[in-house]
Image (tube, rainbow, N blue to C red; front, side):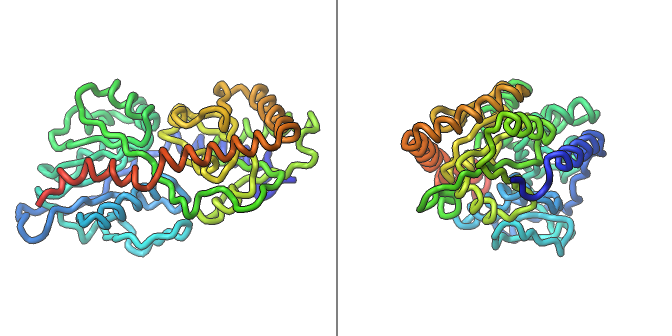
Length: 358
């Protein structure tokens, strides 16, 4: 039983979407005014945020970073070009300022996502910059497509630090640019939202069709041919709020990960936190948490091995239900210990407290 998009429709839609995104023009960074007068207010971290309306873990990370800094008594704000845009797919009360009203000073810090590419160099000169790189492989892709995309990293006297969200991304950026300061900020999950259910789980498999939809279709069709899914419900999670996604993950026993060259791969981590057994591609960014017994990593692109692993896990759920329930609980405990909001807060403050000293 399939909910939301059909497998074939999702595949065609997302292949077209990915193809278009590969050739889109670079995103120009918002224009910010600057002043030499830096005595009127405390130093502020201005987090530039793209006006994308679709759900994005990267945008949510920017918002939460601002919240963490403000809660710690530091000055920070989200900067957007569209004043009236409001994200409804996750709850927030974050400080937001329209870019046309921002005036930066030399005591401030501009935090800018890596997606702005070479246009990062168009930000006001003489103001410290932190590149928040949540997509190290997107960064590498931009180097091949966009002349000058490396300039913010190699020809930028204002660069104070590069933030990344995984061990893998830290290694990629350090390899590409030896000597620049790179800091990993751990992902922190809200454990009041992402946690195992209080009762039992359903015979339900969940996945997100935004990545590699054609391969998802292949894996699921193989499992149907094998008769593995006859009493399992398969849900394609798409266009849901953060809370709705968490609700669905708490009911699922298995989450299929179709990550591809990820900075981190947050959906799979959220699934683990909700007690799911995760099977699939770690996308490299997720290697740090794809661990047995709660996660099964598949060689990238091997859809047959993927289907075989799902069939094997379903067999174990049926033959060793207590052991598999324990494995799911172990995954949730691992996430709670390693990816807490306190860990994220600690990493952010280690970077921004020295930068925002009065």
